[in-house]
Length: 116
Image 1 (spheres, rainbow, N blue to C red):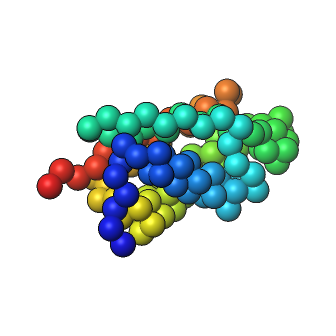
Image 2 (cartoon, helix red, strand yellow):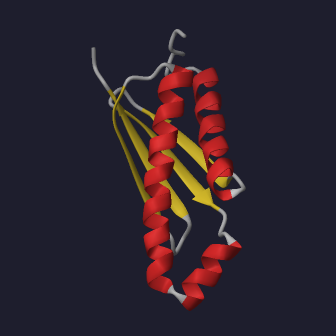
């Protein structure tokens, strides 16, 4: 599949769609807010996620386990997102970084593409 031009609306829409689909696969629902920023060096996604009832319950009963689960779920998220973006958008990703703040439910994902 030929890659979609990164500055096109089609690219941004597909990128957002894939991001939300991965979220739904892992957590059962998509984001409440999703913004994309595209520069020559990187693609950045700013996403506000919904709080899972299970996550809230763990936080109240076993906070250390909740943070451990958040860490591993974020790692799984990065792996699945990278695979989907490479396969479906034809991106050649150098690195995919994601930071998630459980207190605010914000995640920032930065995707640096390989330069040819």
